[in-house]
Image 1 (cartoon, helix red, strand yellow):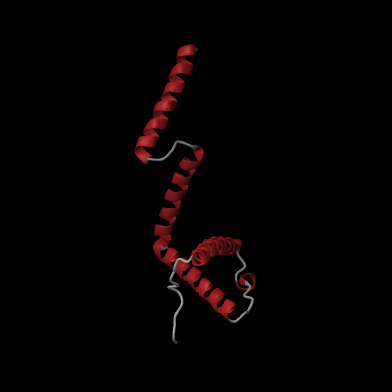
Image 2: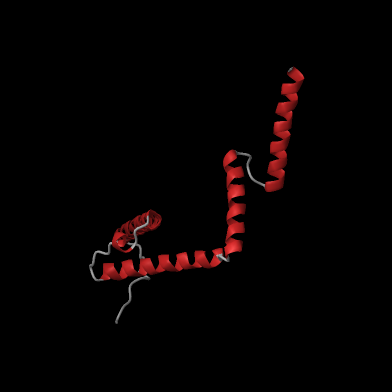
Length: 135
């Protein structure tokens, strides 16, 4: 019984290592499932004539348009409710992520403004590139 369990364990390790060498991915049930699902998906996409690259480009364009609508709504102090326009949770999750990124970016800009104010107090000069003069 001992040689059987040894060979079973050794063969499992060898098969896992060969999998890693062939696919350049970790050996797990999730990676195996993703590999088989992605192959099936791609086969179905090709069979039905679905262009994945075109779809991704359309998604990027839609996100850019949403950002533009949001910025215009903010300029006019109008509350834009995406949930009335879009009813899928995927869209809401993507928009939440974009808001989080914008908040992080805003915090970084606030920290930069604080640093500029401290330098002015010390007598150092800091130019405001974002300010236009004499319009």
